[in-house]
Amino acid sequence: MDIILLVLHVVLSLGIITLVLLQKGAGASAGAAFGGGGGGGAGSVFGASGSANFLSKTTAIFAIGFFVNSLVLAYLAANREIQSESVLDALIAPSTEITTEEAPMSDSSRVDVPAPEGLESLAPTPVEVETSAEDVPPADVPAPAE
Image (tube, helix red, strand yellow):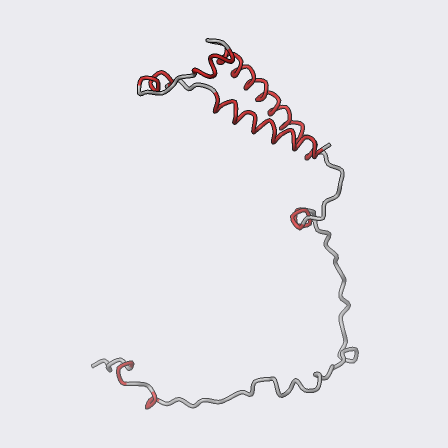
């Protein structure tokens, strides 16, 4: 049913766009003054004044259908019973906190676990760097206060 309503929504929107573009605007008389044809074809099909009434009424019907269809689609989307597997739903859902009570550990219950073999070569070896006042360039040393 959702697919049918979505297709109907697209058809209604394209119909509204088409009907609005077919209608004469308020500046149609100004366009006719500069050589615009001014509705000769539409006037012969719908009558002299019938095109404005027919197109405006059809546009109003399509607009009402579009609004009703929008409300139905919004209602169906809000009351959907299918559980979605969205990441955003997981972020919004309240998280349950698990608290664990830690018992105080005595020194006899602690166990030293040796490091895995082969990792000693990957650890950086500490390097001692000796610096003296002679290593600092003279421009960086402030002048003594006199």
